[in-house]
Image (tube, rainbow, N blue to C red; front, side, top):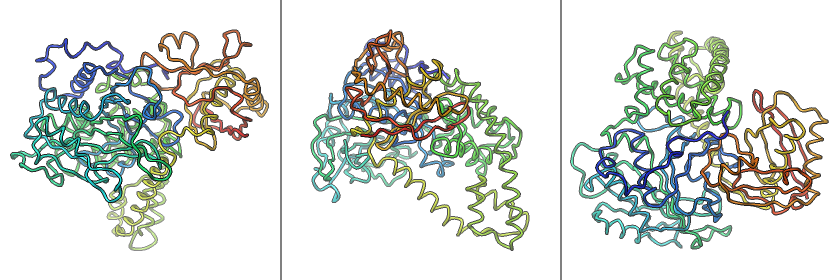
Length: 623
């Protein structure tokens, strides 16, 4: 897969906003591409540097399975590290959120989505941030003021030491938003973070759009579902410490987020996201293949699940994801299997259906090079998974036949077993039970299902325990050890070795790389010994900012699937014994030790298969 692929919309030089013909830019925006173009041009005109979307599978971040928001790849800079492109940046970030998988099927929930984002890293603050959001919404998107409303952070008994955000409310009012359309809500609605136990956090101010057919009420009531959130400015004003105290942040950050799908849906006057241009062609293809109509209520949920899950799967695989039984690979497998089961509900059982439907995704998102460049590989992985799951379905049907002979009712536990182990949704079990004149204990099934959702969400939240970025001494040592390991593998196994992913926490490092067989004990020892040799040699670790082109030319290694801005940070482990003057050179955001002697003793504790053609090493460092 292509390591240096970039999204075309971010790689082109965009003319400053002031030079554009305003009438053209401010024409009614209707499509995904029009929205993205207008957004990036507007913020470039406000001195923001445009950065590419990061991979959906985060490198070196043990706190999340996927990139769930535009701010995740920027955590080091939100914590104070200098960004190579400056203090004002913007992008459109690909995101995956897994907590909503079971809710997909309504008009608004998606597993994969794109997020508009702009950030101030210790530069502009509330007044400028709110003014830019307001101008983008009202002048560029032409949202009329009579359909606009705002929420700000109010007093909260759980945050008694934090004052009500009157400042933001006054700024909105000064821009022309009526006082009746500005409300104050508590921590649950208008407070962000910290993501873990400590770190940056602060109030946020959300923007809402009136979607009702009748005139918007004078007063804003967020309980009225016709008011739909279209944007959110997170104002990282505080830092929570280990004692639970909220102190004013030395570097105050702004993080705006706005969903592309939701915004395009609203601008088109639609209630259903799946009728917008980033979904409609996929739905139409499903209609064509099944001979069924999306307009029929009984088909909507099934078609939405199919469209959503296939799109998310294609993007995950494009960024290096592989189906497996754990972590992000398990989520990918679950998405593909749910898509297959729902295709069967529409009466579609032909092979390669997912790849047929996926063609529309490549057309819609032709501005993502990673889809075009990796298309054959994506299709191959999907075909294999589809074939393997057909065998699992057969086993599930055999299990169902055995269960159906137990009595007149299928228990909730058995119904959940069919869902959890074989991917049978409850509707499918009920349909099969009906044919055999059996009942399903749906009440007990729901209890089991709710336990499953609770465990899933707890697991997802658990990933955030150490915060979004763990810069502890042990983790820092492991980060640099990973660079040494990467180069040691290349020297022992061959120059064709490339990093396929990594995950670091305070206890251990996990490193994935391309290799088609198990390493011998001798090879493992050679790699381990070479890393420890370089640690003992006390090599200096140098950090510099340089152009992407120059870094690659000088031999810098890049993370798999990552897309980089024009100016990047490079960490070099200097070594005079090497012809090129260094042992390792990698594009990375850190953190790293200043000298390899700080790492300690490196020990490989496991070498195993990660997926087809990919091996995994787990290692620790000891004092």
